[in-house]
Image 1 (cartoon, chains in turn brown, purple):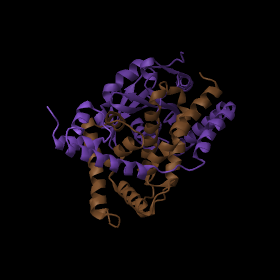
Image 2 (cartoon, chains in turn orange, blue; image 1 turned 180 degrees about the vertical axis):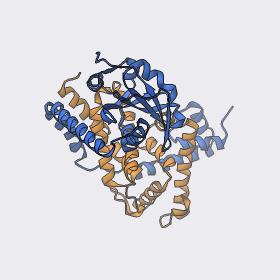
Image 3 (cartoon, chains in turn orange, red; image 1 turned 30 degrees about the horizontal axis):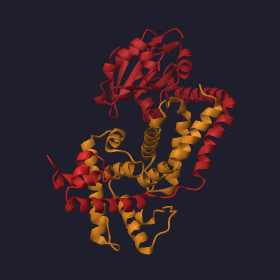
Image 4 (tube, one colour; image 1 turned 180 degrees about the horizontal axis):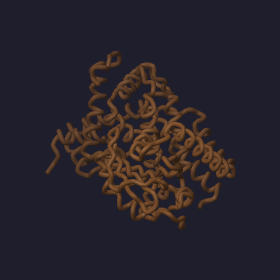
Length: 175
Length: 238
């Protein structure tokens, strides 16, 4: 059994390394700022309780994502979260962009939020966490070729949306 | 054999940063391939920018507080847990007696699982420390052998028709399965109970009984050996 100090230090390292990416992931799977924050806090609360079961530190990222996904599934079991008029989702930004870039980024964000979960989740695991197709396959419990197809289609849908509607369009019919 | 453009585009769409040697060779094989790769990489940068949202400023502070709070209050946890347990078992037992004066095991299993069975499965995310398993089962005059304890993902006391039992979630090759140990209930061995899309297989033990609960696809009857060989009853051995 590790001492409290060691345990706390280990926990804080995990929080520093992964809390921002977990928040991003949560934000994009649920589309709700407050729920994303709750999900991340609940994830780390459970992680704290089960910390001694994490033997392999290199598996920490996948372990935390698994906890978060289960917690999100539980949230849906209890109630359907209030979701979302995509245009009204509040997204925190810390960058500065030119107006045209900003418009394009916002359109892309609407598209991401409208993607079906089966396309959105693998895309988030790849882009936010840098997972390989094999890691996504393991995390989601589906075959690697299915993962590759979903990633390909996710990008195609987003590109089609940008090309079709430019910066002014309506993306609903593509999803 | 070299990769054609259609295959290349599919791989590119699945992973623009693919570093597979065949993929990289194809990427540099002609201007058409190079142009497609450059376009994909440009799109990827837009995608990364779109997904790169900022986290709340105080998120990390809140999370760090979880560990600090837990350590500070750890000394009170065993007492608080014991008090909560006594209250919870007592309240549940009173409630149960008031509402279920006569109840058979089959009805009990279905109703008990409907109460919080799925919720507890969702909470069964990590192995349970041996001492926690021992703490619950020894007070019910039972103990779990390694085949059961190593699979344990959740355990708590629960009310049963004739007293207190244990509600467990165990990890099996067929996924997470619930086992309810009822030390004071006798059942006819091998009965199957169907309820709400679930199945419970009742097992008679040396002292008391157990219900193994899962979805029909999990073939719960096949898991009886884990319970009969590893859940030893009638004696609080350690």
